[in-house]
Image 1 (cartoon, rainbow, N blue to C red):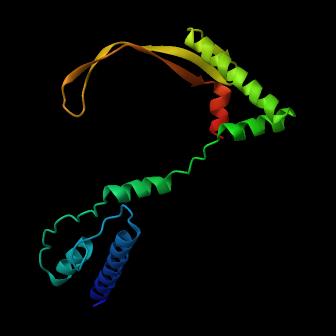
Image 2 (image 1 turned 90 degrees about the horizontal axis):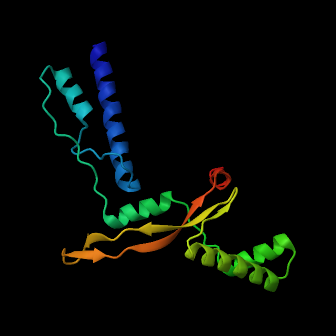
Length: 175
């Protein structure tokens, strides 16, 4: 009698857990599985064991599929919103930190960016200790495919500027 009571209690707990899991999975859009049918796999095998019958084979539960829009929304929720720091804000911050006027800060920033652009374009490497390195990388000519038609195309060799962050910069970003 006591074992029957324990099995009944387990069956009740398992079925209520199923009801909570399936409604939570459908409403929150989480990756938990929503079980199919009126009983969970666990509770149906318990009921079959209690009655003395051999448990039936139960199909695996199907997962709730997400659409592309729902997946994109979930990814956007997980990631922090990136704030764009524009040039006028950057100039104001330089003026605030250095005590220079905004016009002088803009001239200084323009001079720095112009110098980096000229030197890297001429093939030089600019290394700023603790910040990083600007350099010119070369890409070889290669064969590619037109994604629309699938036909092979030739991609010309090109040079591209690149930046490698220094150790101190990387550490500061990972605080």
